[in-house]
Image 1 (cartoon, helix red, strand yellow):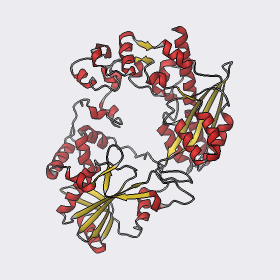
Image 2 (tube, rainbow, N blue to C red; image 1 turned 90 degrees about the vertical axis):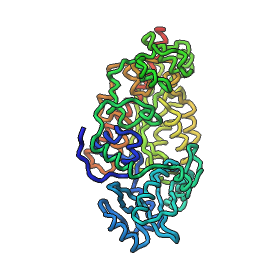
Image 3 (cartoon, helix red, strand yellow; image 1 turned 45 degrees about the vertical axis):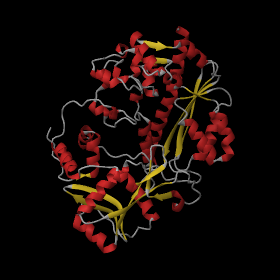
Image 4 (cartoon, rainbow, N blue to C red; image 1 turned 135 degrees about the vertical axis):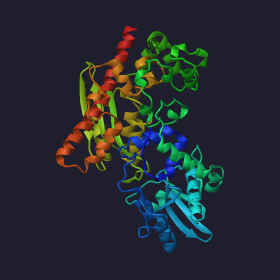
Length: 495
């Protein structure tokens, strides 16, 4: 496949080339609008420029030539967002300033733990600048202080930390940046040439699955490379947490049940997948019945929607804290009558959210939440820290929470149609075909967040639509919990 590309490439293209040629291919072909994971009230660059008092410093711009950037740097001794290039490979260095023995490069990160792998990009930049006669002799990072608690005003001196070291996998400051860079080896000229050649002739043959496709967070272009809908529901490709599945695929094994049981790593969900592949469905009736017996009426079904702020916008918030702007609550009484309550607001609505939730949630009975530990329960604990006066009331709620995802996560119930996943959206079609997320204007949590971010700047007519769409989506989550819970009750009864 021949693709016309701009002559210039970027350092990020080099790194993507190392990751996977199909990553570059998809990124070039699918020019989607960038949606940041974090809600930023102002661009991050403006915040760190204020910290370094660089508001009036010379600043580079897209398309600047080497001569333009070097002239600004030599004239002022400092340059923000400087653009440089070598052999048609461009890069951008956030802060470059002159020191006694050369130049210091400073890299701000919207992170609390910039990792040692960042040293590879820094070394590329150092080599590019060396070809231009600029010797970078010192490196620093700026990162967010995860323990900072905002008061009335944002204190940049408390928010930011600066170091000449990077973090290891355990999130501890470890080796110096220079020591990390010494471990990085590459031939920059060859690297650039190979990347440019790839971009001029992107691969058009079928990609092969490898560990990088799903390792850690699944590649954002996974679905562009692999059409899992063509695979059988019990495909070995769906075997969860397996180090053997790629080898098994290559050897011609198609179904999980064809795998030698000795190659299973002992996870309950793997066992459930194996048994479902043999029998079409796996249900541990006794274990599910025992789990269900813990629940007490009335049964509540609860779900939150929230946005994540890297820079704390309000008092008592920390970096990367979230702000809950929506909850949905279905309550089922002893006669199986179902009622619905919810909340939606914007701005600093934390206290109003808390007050509404405390007033709405029944004082007794179990509260079913899907995948609650890192989500709804954690949100309530954080709100209790931010508003101590409500901490006991919030604890009364999360102490009664029961995680509805556990029967699926632990392999007590597995249907081959789950394809190795147990998100609520994967589970709902197993128990009903009368309602679906596909019917909604907002189909997932990220879409809800992006819609929420547009709410404040929208006019009243658009606000009404956004509000209703978010409420409908969140309501679907708690109704789906109701459907799944009754699906488990039915399975135990029939079993």
